[in-house]
Image (tube, rainbow, N blue to C red; front, side, top):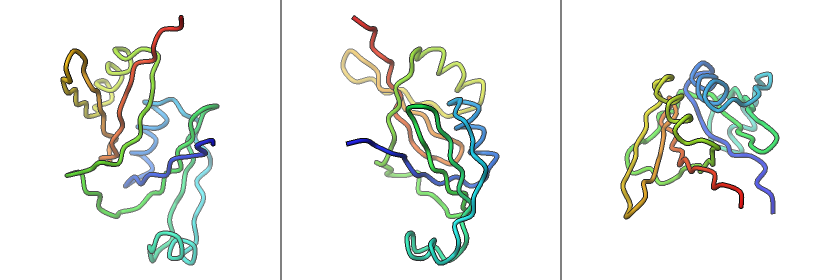
Length: 130
């Protein structure tokens, strides 16, 4: 099984670019418009949706631009990303004003960030090669 993409919503193209392009360093595709009949049939959204793909060789996010409000409270859905250097990544998050939460769990710390629209990401440090 292969995970082909993760679809999320953002409130603006600027927010999506700031997070997926500037922080994660992903390639941005030309925006496309999902017509109303597909938006309605797939997502029960009664309007066109702007869709932008951000991807690399190993990661692909399909971002839908919508003014739909997102519930940041009690959010369980999240995407887990593994980074080569956790401290460098967190420094970049701070530089770009990305919200960081670090939660102690026994002898380790869980790290989560939120994009500019509240989407939740768990961040793990890539283990060293043996």
